[in-house]
Image (cartoon, rainbow, N blue to C red; front, top):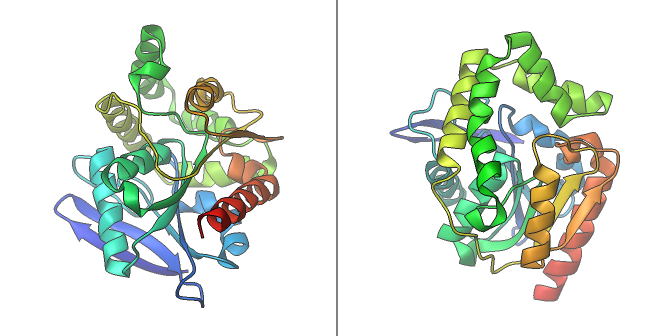
Length: 270
């Protein structure tokens, strides 16, 4: 993977790309969740590099893309647009985990013609229709809960909710520990403050697959994914023996599921 960056008035955004030897190979963009970084997709790289150009990046306020001013999902989508423009990449497959799925949804609203497919990993949908008023109130209180936890307890709690296997837990913990508590509190506040600005559901014009870990007890992600699947008709696949970061906890099952989905759907589109 070759590391690069793009700059805006808000800050610097880092990304990594491995181009397939076939210049016509589709590009997969992996977008991680909250308080982690691009290493959340380490176990996807070798698998998907066989058939695709692969791009990973550190979301603004995460990893090497710190500091960053005025975080929003719209601004993150703009940074991704700048990355793709620099690389001369037009159409993409988006894979988003957690809040990375919000960035993917925002990008889809802005660039519906550019998406070949979208795969969500423990992603909640935009759209007030999917949530009760009580559920939205609980989500708004999450940053306060994060702020009240002692630092070490916060690290362990976030890592355990993301990974139940030894690899999944330690992969998450290593990324989370790179951020001091004040930055984690800041990113939760920014991410959840912007969560409620887009109130309508996103209408995808490309194939969509929702995945969720069978052991995903973080918040109510599994329930929200189920509602999204039932109301939209998007298929939802449960990854066994996996928590919130299903692609790290059970990477073999996730890679197989996502790989087969893309093979079938992209072949149908030819």
